[in-house]
Image (cartoon, rainbow, N blue to C red; front, side, top):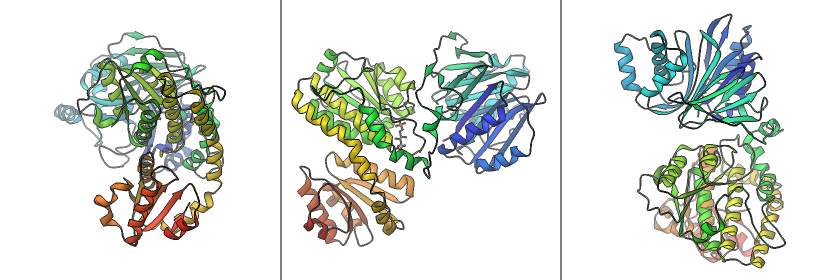
Length: 563
Ligand code: M6R
């Protein structure tokens, strides 16, 4: 994932850019670069590999600049190299780009025919040449960008400036996130809020099809045709400290340990232990609508999709409404049957995931009311949906979701209870019981986290394994999927999640003395069924790592590791 940072204002731009790029490092990248104006001339520095390489390069220079853009690149078009790294330059114009220009090959061929010297393999460089041609033809930068926006297709966030106009940065958004940070006598632009949190908490969130003209005096937002748009900044309640590692070795670990706090924040102000009532202030959907919905469609990607699968269980069980769950990238292509009495729920940590957003737009287009369960205040999904339930996890810097997932589950539990109450499926007594259990969650999670060393011990035995299976049944099947996703994403060990009962229909062939199988077996309605699945694994000498909720002597003899 690429990262963008831009600055214009009184401060020295390059240190602001470098700090912003450091905050974006977590997104993963293979090269980085900055562009700025020094002594009235546009300058550009880029390097392959870690940001430290770029830092070392910049440390040798004495630069004074009050405008600049920076980028961390994750190679898509063209391998990681200095030439392919951003910013890209054509004459006196420079830009950074996130996303993909889908028609770049056609545009490139036309440019080459006109004799334009293309230096990189990227789709991004094409855009800067197109802008430069417009400028050479006599357009000002804003008009030039507007004209080029009519030619390019795809998903893009762009930030552009010109040596001839050092008092203006232009930011453009189409299906790639971009936020404008507002300061005093300065403006920031970034692909993600944490990049600028140490400077401001006031943000303007651009919509698709909008461009912003940034100067030290402020921001003007227009649509791609140049019509002015009125935008009000939103203040985010994240502090810069929340986006620091806080003594942890890495962000993911910090975020795992933040779960008790994050879950408590997700519950706060929404529940009453006296009467069992659950209420959301941000859900602007009437009780009469919620009472009569005929079906719920939940759409999400990755970890959020796993949360959606858990949400289906909870909502169907507690509110007795049928729920369909779709992966974001599949939903709009399967011609879903949608009706005005349905409710569409998008689940997304970022509130920006393109496929989930496209699903939401599909539902809205068919007149379906929409609700977003998301973490980022002011994100596109939060703004474009009819109602929103924030998860209050705080900034997610680690790319692998942890606290984002467990706060989504918490929010979905509350939503299921809320719907159950509105639809007369759950009485106050049962609600109070559920809520009493929920408020214990942060403490229970703390207890699990205090046993970190037990987990480290188990992992020492398996870190060289090449494959893992994760099994669960019922509501724990999506949790098994999430466990498998985390293992592949973080350890690069191949892992698959399966419903435990499905194992005998194929995957069992993989089980031998080298195959660790993580089995989720809490004391629930399907406990004995999962126990039978464990016996099937042991009959083939598989290694069982059991995640249990009760301790029975007999059980310990059957499995290899217990947590
Ligand atoms: O921001 P979102 O929740 O919409 O992101 C969707 C997925 O990309 C995300 O959940 C991803 O699968 C996790 N970060 C993986 O740990």
